[in-house]
Structure formats: structure tokens, C-alpha cells
Amino acid sequence: MTERRIERPEPPWHHTEGIGSGLVDTPPAALKSGGELGTGIGRKHQMTDTSQKARAPRREAPKSPHLQVWRWHITMWTSILHRATGVALYGGALIIAGWALALAFGPDAYATYKGLLGSLLGRVVMFGLTISAFYHLANGVRHLVWDTGHALDIKSANASAIVVFAFAVAATVSVWGIAAMTGAI
Image (cartoon, rainbow, N blue to C red; front, side):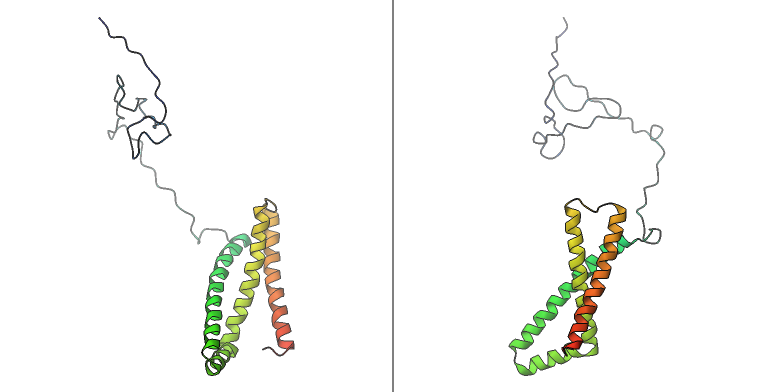
């Protein structure tokens, strides 16, 4: 007498493989040989053929683009400079913290710190921080516009990159020009 077997479909989350099996709601992957997975009653256990003759020839792994072969473009520069100016502004925050500490330590410490910032090296650093602040501001606004879904095409992205660079240079030169006219530097 043959045994009658009723096939009941199992829910996709019922499998016994992997961490948290039974809690994962993804169905198990099908084997290449077309066998079934799982350990339910009456299920077959089949394994794929892994003999050397059954394997496809090994392909070379894909290569990641390297900077030597990558075509540089303006939006790439804006991305890199946005990160670099963010790091520079963090350094500027440390300079401001040093200024506050010098102010707290008294007139002698403050005069020394002010002399350091007024030196040629200090002015170069402050100029770099000024252009970093304006660049980071303009590029941040550009990203906010992108977050609304506007100006994402290549032509608009390239044009906005040029605007960001122009704004950073013009604003920095304006601020330093006003500072020089008023005698602040």
C-alpha cells in the first residue's frame, strides 16, 4: 500500500538555515540543480554538483576605478573639496577655542595669540579658513537644492559647481578687502 502524501506549502519564513532561521522573512535561495531547500517531511535533499568539470572557468574579479584612469571633472572636485573644507573648518574651530583660552589666560597670553594670528603664517591660515567657510557654505546650499530634487542633471551640476567656486572666491576677497580698508589686518 502506498502512502499518501499531502504537500502543504510552507510559508517563506520557515527555513532552518542561517542565524535566526524562522525569524527571517526571506525565502531560501534555490539551488542551481533545482533541488528544494528545507527539512520538512518528505522533502528531498539535493546538493549541487561541485566537481571541477562542472564549474565554469574562473573569471577575473572586476577592478575598481583608480584615480589614474578616472576622468576628473568639476563635480568630483566639488565633492572632494567639500570634505576637505569640512576638515579645515574643524581645525578652525580649534583655532577659535585656542583664541578663547588665550583670552581667558589674560592680556599677555591674548597678545601672544593675537601676534601669532597676525603673522604671515597666521594670515595665510585665516585666509584659507575664510575661503573654506564660504566654499562649504555655498556647496552646502547647493546640496540643499539637490535634496529638493532640482538641478541634478549634468549641465546644472556643472554650472552650480562654477557658481560655488566663484562665490567662495568673491566673498573671501570681499571680506578681506573690507578688513584691509578698515584696518583690521
